[in-house]
Image 1 (cartoon, rainbow, N blue to C red):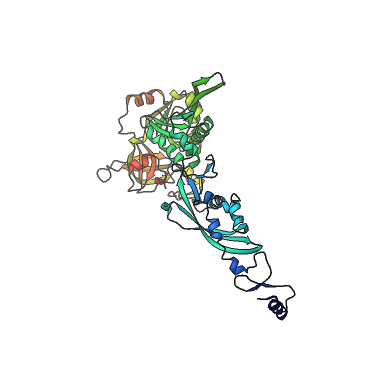
Image 2 (image 1 turned 30 degrees about the horizontal axis):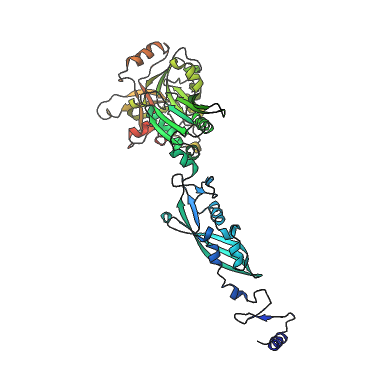
Length: 474
């Protein structure tokens, strides 16, 4: 077009500013440095700039094959845990694009693009095993003083790269602290199972464990630093009562540089008492309160062991006949606490009748003797004293032999329930157990024939209940 035609077009359109036609399509536009309209500028290949990795290669993000952490920086020092399709993962991927991070501005400027800005970003679903991460980005770019906007698909290749922590773990003699967890009893597997479950549910505690070895009465946990090992033992002491001893051993020493390689050993010995065990508390025991010189049942094991007498008095409530046994108290008088029977000696009984004691009925102001605990919302305490009539499951329907006992499971049992308990009337005791009854138990203690421990479901396997499954109780 000649200048005369441009002048005529400007006058007929009534515009007050000078306009020019686009050098590509002829559309009348305001003047700009490229003399092109926005539609023609949109043909600029911004996608090739965004999809270009360092050195013109593909976009790559590194992940450790063993710990599944992603590399945050390219210096191979910082690896972090990221959830799939999380905001943190999106931020990491956007930082890996040189055109957006400002690391490669030369080839961007050569393409005539002054600035790139991300307006929106979202993940595109990919097969988990494809080793790919795909994004849909909305990019705003300034090309020759004109702003354009494009939607671009970007693909990242996930490649394996071992992190420094896993590299150190693969080498030999890299640990500096070891935690030796032990429980010295015949069936120590039951007590250690509680700690195994607690560790399995806490990912933060497992994060710094280099390796685990199974030993005869426990486990050995290896850690890179003593601080992480101490933090681990503090967590274990909240799950089960134990005593912790710390020792150090010198591996090597460099007197010239004044450095030394020292390994730390933290020995954790658990109290050898498990839930549902029968324990004899000697006459000389200190810290047992009213349970001194009695046969007791282990109700719960946490940071302390909760005990209750197996022959509760009807004149007192359940709480007054229980006590907490802490690890310090146990280890000071270890010889005063003897294991009488373990949960392997439990027998199944059938409940025939349940009647709460008079004091328990008066406490709840109700004449109903069949109140059942159904959780904290039921308004009924979990334990209550009751007179219960039971019969052995093996004898049920064969003979008429029944037993009467006082138990703390009054709010958990109903006629027809199946319950686990100790049959002291027919159990053959070891010589050590008989000696404990004759010498450690006071003369006024009444030995019961039956000790009820917990209610179970009718079709539930007894071996599952013995490991301490709380779901067996109602």
